[in-house]
Image (cartoon, rainbow, N blue to C red; front, side, top):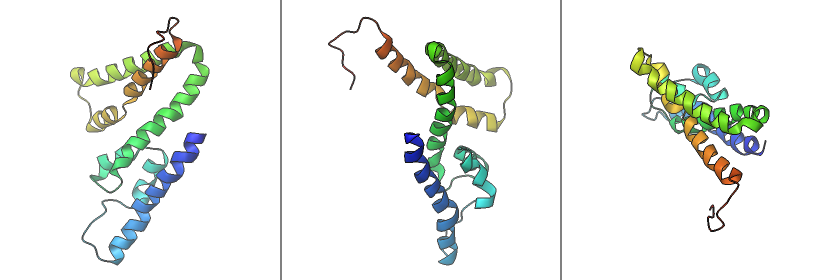
Length: 152
């Protein structure tokens, strides 16, 4: 909940700025820059934390860096419920995330995939977050901890 209260207001403020306020000023002052989309075309991508798809469908734009927040928020929206229900098998969950991502990365070697598939698989780096989770798991679940080892 703390994470939501800290990140979501800023995320949605940036979405408002980049889809409504900045385009308004660009049009009002006749600035030579064209926003490739309107709020009506992209609102649902931003509401459901899929800003990477805005770039996929509309090209480069002001809010392009939000893709990473979208990926992170999707991960945590899925992770919290999974962690709650699979807490006793967290190691299996972490390894499953890594295995599933590995399989998804190999699919294009066997069948032709769409550009959308390739984009979604490449930007949703859940396996990287799972690797971090593995590190945390081993630090906190190792029975014999080396006392000289410190985590910064």
